[in-house]
Image 1 (cartoon, rainbow, N blue to C red):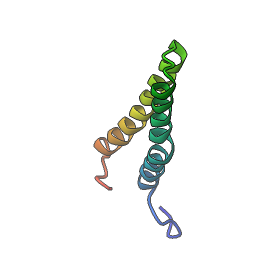
Image 2 (tube, one colour; image 1 turned 90 degrees about the horizontal axis):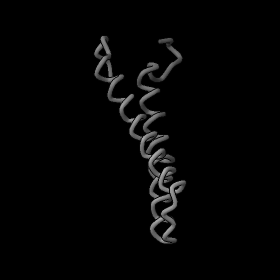
Image 3 (tube, rainbow, N blue to C red; image 1 turned 30 degrees about the horizontal axis):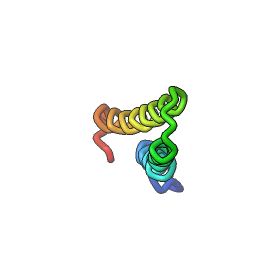
Image 4 (cartoon, rainbow, N blue to C red; image 1 turned 90 degrees about the vertical axis):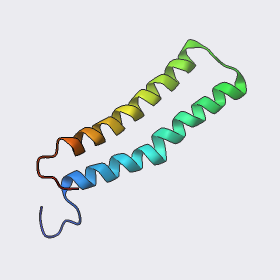
Length: 76
């Protein structure tokens, strides 16, 4: 880590992944669910879109947890 860096690479990765999940992935999934419930569109494509969004969000949070658990340096 250079002296001009604010955070180390792992901390920056966690912050950006967390911000992406909170600001984009979770609201997008909730918006899709709202539209499906409001319109009543239960087509296979609409349901598959929600499932893929939820799986992508779960994968991102899983990689954050995996990176934290396997960090040999014990940093943040």
